[in-house]
Image (cartoon, rainbow, N blue to C red; front, side, top):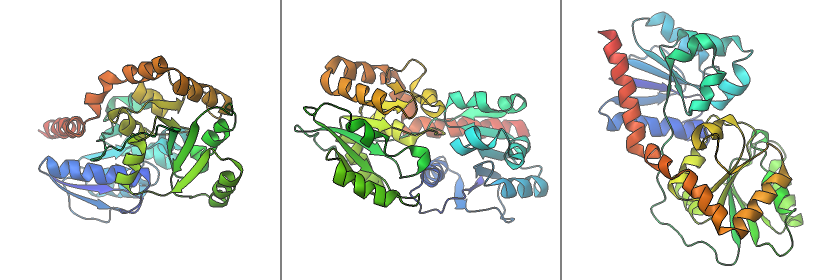
Length: 320
């Protein structure tokens, strides 16, 4: 098939949705299809349209459904769709109605869909590979990796706040990689580094450097208030780096409801307590890694490609 992927984020962007679109494009090529990423659909011929983001891609979804009603239309839902837009945004909800299939990045998101649309949903977990070069972990510091752009929804300074609550003897060091997106956050990060010797903002890293930084860390801290299904969690799991995450739907759907590394959204003290446990208790680290050991095969690139292959076969069979 010729598959067009509508992704509102610029193709070369380091934002999560753009990274996801590029990975899917390669998956489709590996499956033997033609694939191309576009910012919007403007009548280009194809056999299937995949729209990433129900609200932001609504104009393309509506135009395609109207012009090509006989062709399959798939809408992939982001965290913004699920947790902000769907309750009240008419365009986002219409995109769901018009779609033949919906793609979720984790199972927990299904409960946020309108009941009438849940049967259309298929879960495709985001895959990841460890870095080609796995650096050695520091023996002097207990490195906590934060891989997130500096945006309010990521609560990017929560780990820095938590680091300020640990005892002086702790070796905890926060290494934060990400681009400052929200206004004033670059200045805030610089100020935080001056005032908090445990916090280091590394700025934006390229994809491979970010994976190396993660693999060299002792723990990944996910501080987000909302995620559709963060790929960095997949990267941590396949690199065997323990994850400490806010108890949000996007992480629950990947790590599982009973995962022992969750803490309440915005709770710096709870995160500090978990960081100290990870630093001081080898048994806790083993528990965190053991809880996701069976998940690793499902996060391999082959598993993600096969999931897309099954969806395409299902769509093709439905046309017969």
